[in-house]
Image 1: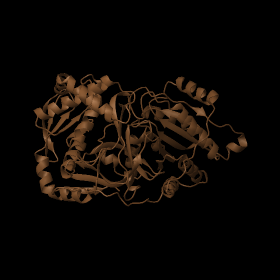
Image 2: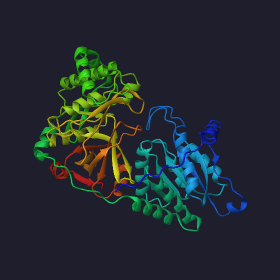
Image 3: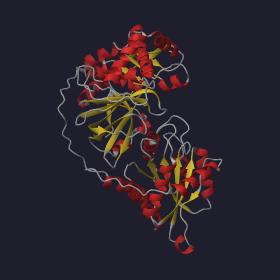
Image 4: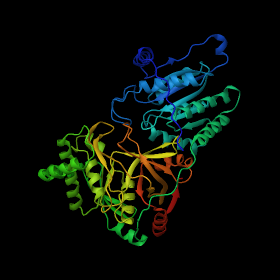
Length: 519
């Protein structure tokens, strides 16, 4: 069951936004202190003062990051401010921005004499460390995710608070503004003399009560067959991962019994230069004709991406490898490579090989192991987002296969768009099939553990913020438990179509590891 989404009232453009931006520009610490309510002395005695802190780089995003370069946060912050003013009448709100710990410390210093009763911290960009300072105030803190923008930091930092048993931090991860309103109104507990522990427990009840009950957990038929764990181990040992992380080439230790080698950017770049341009043009033609849409990507960029694909294939052949992972952002922004590998990874994964993002060797090894286990099904690396309003986990990334059942399986539609964070190059939005059971995995070699949860694919989100492909799924099990592991495992997960629960346990037994179920 899906709740209706609350649409907050529009804020007049003529005053509030100009005031907000003017105040931000005048503040050297990147903090805008904007009183949002005025009141007479009589009402002031009855209201609690709450500070909203937006944790972000700047009002207009200056560089590539979630949600995307050039994103204007001002209307979002105004909308949140106006909604809370209207629907939380027992509070006075003061709105601020902070980009990191130094700004957060200045806010706390200022608030020593301002009778602030609590804080609402919005994670607007992923990794700005603001909330960590604010929680040291010992005052009640409501921590909120601006989804497809701050979600990585929100998940990692929230898991840390849960693990540390911080009793003054409640959290909300919802696309429905009503959930935020109800959680903010729990500050009334503090206003009436209650404890921070009671406040946190009340916000948890709001989150749980407003999370929909599990939906239909019948799954579309899937004829997945898997190989034995012994055969899987044999294939892993005969595989090879190439990790392109910097300008150094060197041997590397195996990961999960899979041989690995570091290869320099220059090796990959030379292979891209040497790629047959006629063949690259033919591949670009095929991509363009098969895509349902090519948006803001020139044919020249497609050819360049196809040359990168051919270059990666040649490097794989040279090193007798079947998996490659590239530090794509570092290589591209550093001028070491001259095309994003996203479309090349897409093509490799469609072929039963492994192309993996960001030189993430743990996720690459996860892909190698379970692509072998499933006879060629591709893994999908993602940066997940959790939305309790829909009882969903959304797997988001700019690389995805469109043959989720393997090289010989059915194709699903895909479009070609720019890489989302910087609006450059070419990447893929894959519209993955709904109704099927998926298994999401990640390995931790040092701990000899395999992390796992399962979910039912229910759709795809076209939101323009953050990565292009967004597979929406309903977790099988406890969505609350899904908040608890990110600080120990990092943000990336690898999703496969099919029921891989028993195969994961069997593989773990065969290599002396253990499985951790995160939902």
